[in-house]
Image 1 (cartoon, rainbow, N blue to C red):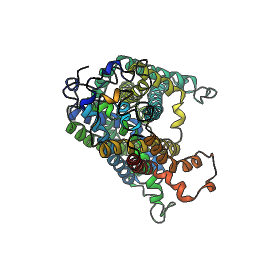
Image 2 (image 1 turned 135 degrees about the vertical axis):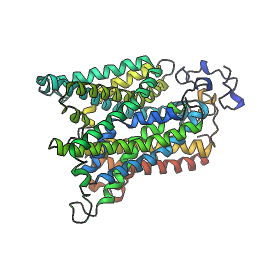
Image 3 (image 1 turned 90 degrees about the vertical axis):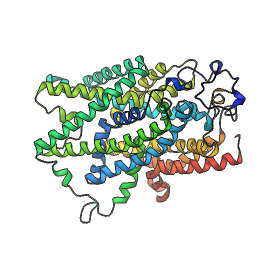
Image 4 (image 1 turned 45 degrees about the vertical axis):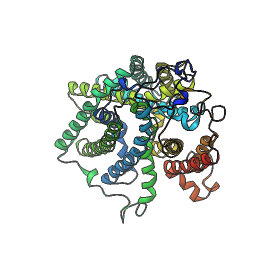
Length: 499
């Protein structure tokens, strides 16, 4: 295979035939420069599209429910996204420089076979998020049907599932639409993103205008003091809540901070991916979270109850045309976010396990099936569990992976990769029978400090089993995992350059 002139490579493996390798398929292949169509606006639109979603809208509710006032919640969300955009931009570099997706990039640090470890961990988290977004889209359909056909709102929860038959049927219907888009392929995904970005921003701003106009202002939540202020019920406990909350905000996009090469491989140049992400991610997250807080505040005045879910807000509109149009827009927006954020990566990750047998589409289908089996409605049922179990727990796994990848690419290899070697099962990235022992040990060292705190959170062990200091490390899971794995990888790689 003749290398693309736009792909950097090392001479020794130029004669290696990529297409004959069992590590190769067309979906994992390096993207040639001629096929790259994403500029700065594409990356900004990508993040506007993915960040402007219902989970973002509802994110601040968990923080306010925990005691923060509105500006503390928005600032925490903004700061978390400023932090996570740093590894996002760094990991994206290899995608743009070499045209390779996330699982192939992982081969440089974890080995040609060992790369399945980070790929599958990332894929399973994405399956959970895929299911959550399908549940949100299905819930929108369910609630609009209940407005026109009130009898559908009743029903007995099904055994094991704990949701009604109609709720489950709406979930499966929206899930089926996602499967159809996966079948259509990557170009349909890009088209959806371009439609969705302005659509959901417009819907959010219209909700904001409606709230302000009908409530005579943004209401009591914006005037509500922090529960951590002197004289309040949680006085003096701000920092105890802030740091785990910040870890949760970083964890929100910790998934994409790893697999961003799946998108940056389509970039024209590094400047496009860097500026597009820096501009698009933190600002959109903060803006959409503020819209959620402000509209929710207004519902307290307009409806005499606090409605954190925008679907619940929209179902209160009496004009059927407005209701239907708004819900369709919401479903399209949720669909676009779901496909881009939660299908592209796991589809590539599952394909990486058996490149000759699993294509991008088959990987997407696997994602869909696992997303159902994870029963996503239970993952988001409890706001406290949403942040302190779901977001922080998986950040404890993904932080160490990010630390290892960045240490290997920027420090050990100084941004030089042999593209052909990444597809050679007996090449320089095969390490020990395809596994990098150094990376696996560094990963285990990065995860271990968060494990006791996690086991206490899920009530597997008693809180007295470990010291308060060790248990407290769980609240900083992404940060401790990233830092420990980063340093451990560098030290171990120096001791065992080929291990």
